[in-house]
Figure (tube, helix red, strand yellow):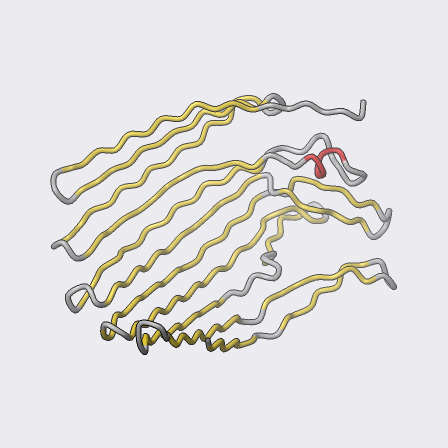
Length: 239
């Protein structure tokens, strides 16, 4: 009764289609079979188009899933009735270059929906802790990346990420939504500069910014979860 045997197999196929000189379409599909959860199909659609040999417009729609871990199923906090998480992600963006390819820029926006979110639940009345499936998670964000070759010996790179998300669930018989991306900053930015002095010496500096973010901790005095806001910080590296 304390043993477990699970197995999974999958079959995958992909198709790549070149529409003329500038268009491209990739289609992919995978059929998975899990000994506990049965058949779970996933797919990927990735079209792109190149304009003037300089601007690439692209998109992607894909699905995915994640089965509960053995700990989430069979530990002292386990729940054998857990369902796999299911997700659908859509993103669109463009990348282009300027100044004879010395500047390269990529911008992407994305949205992800997740169902049957795996969640660790604690009941302050009964003191019972257990993994459960919550309802729906919805995240969206923006990513930016730029590299600039200022000269043969000097280069610069910058990135920026924005992400936010909420979970929709029921509390006390009512639908509610709240931000649950714990420890994940809403804003994250990086700026790097590299200077090659000679074939043997290079100087690099990196400036990182992380915005404030929410977290929770378990209060041993009250046996409750407490919310806290972690301060923003900036980190400067030089090597």
